[in-house]
Structure formats: structure tokens, C-alpha cells
Length: 94
Image (cartoon, rainbow, N blue to C red):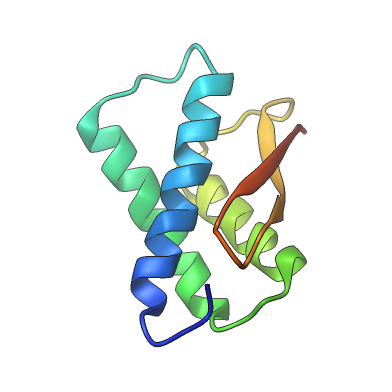
């Protein structure tokens, strides 16, 4: 997903992360404002490390974005890996 439109690539990854977190945390409210805030926080962190195809760097950026919003608890899901080709994410319990 490295290319001329880094913002679009970051958005795809961020939306995948937020969807996975919402699916895994039944206590997290899925509202448009909460979702938009989470996507934005993750995108900001992703854009700080992009362009890169390093899955670990992308995952760390996603987790920093989640941490900014304190979305995940200590035992909540965190991003383990990001596929830089298609933006899919692998989550694991923290």
C-alpha cells in the first residue's frame, strides 16, 4: 500500500484496526464519532512512519494511535501485524 496516496492507505489500515477492535470489545460503543476519532488518531500515527512496508512499524503506529484514545485495556486486543500490501491487520489479545 505504499504509493502516492499515503493518506488513503493509512485510512484503510486505520479503519481495519477500528473494525477489529470494535468487534473484539463488546463494551466499546460503536458510534460514528467514536469511530472517526479512533480512525483519525491511528491515521496520524501511521502517517508519521509512512511510507514503509515494515509490518512491525505499521503495527506499532496503530497501537500508539489506539493508546492515544485509551481504546484498549491492558488485556484488550492490540495490533500484532499489518499487511502493507492490502492493509489487513492481525490482532492479538494484549
